[in-house]
Figure (cartoon, rainbow, N blue to C red):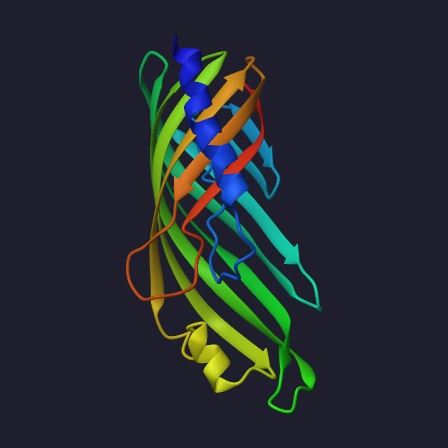
Length: 238
């Protein structure tokens, strides 16, 4: 019975891929790292189309994680948009019941977003414009889930605090910057709540993972993806 529930988030994930658009964004959520560690020296590595993630239980209740994320889109007429993130975190895990684990992690990282596109001037001449933004992020992430040799399911909610500390542009007019909420992008701290459901199905040491979540802007407006999804493989060494 329980294996059927794996296909609920997987079905939602497929719909998300179908509806994904090429909209330019300043913030896209990476996959939430939800290792559900259970004992010291346990190691988990996960790979998706955009993420490389790892988690290690360094103590009986202490875990560390590292996340790498990269996503890019290249379109027609010299359009390019890409971004990446590197971060690390430390947290507490507690297998307080058989197969049930609670975790809470906190961490920080740095990221970068780049965009270039072709504009048409009033005289119909074309010119290339671009911008680069560098940001830092602090996050807090509690997880709770069920884990077994065949099936895992986890519910998590990450609270992310994003601060752009450097922004530069070339050939971007004030109207274009204002349209994309970029005229004072380095001033505020952007806050996002990112609830997600993760399901894994497979064997003791390797499982297929599907995740779907929402990106909820809790404050100042910035262009961001409304949701996120990933499909990948998880390797676990216990």
